[in-house]
Image (cartoon, rainbow, N blue to C red; front, side, top):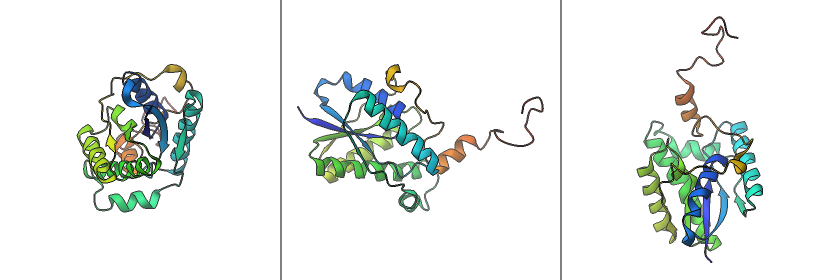
Length: 191
């Protein structure tokens, strides 16, 4: 049976994608791949990588990884294009381009990404980046809209669940309007 390379950015999205793949009997045997130079700061990167590794162990799946912290690569890729959707398009192209290359090098005929499970991502941009990367590498990109897939609760039990996409810009977008961690607190009755 063929194998499918899954680009994974977090444990919860990976669990959703695995649920979706169960309905795709021809998709092949999944192998999980980690490459996420967009995730910042470093401690956030480590939390997400640890959770993916723990899920992979629970699911007994093969795992490939580029664990180098990619701050410089990501910043170079989005420099001058820091706004949405430009930075997202560059980020998808960076990550899916590398995943397609690894798929080709490792003999995977097809790859996909946990990005297709997110309600917060631009699916048209993901699909375009995945298909472009697939054409260049000579492999296939499997796009399915798995936003409604439910993660297996046992796989994600007690695993870290992030609060923003991953890049430092999305962290700013997510928390800019909150009063979390400000002093004095916005509500004097709370500390």
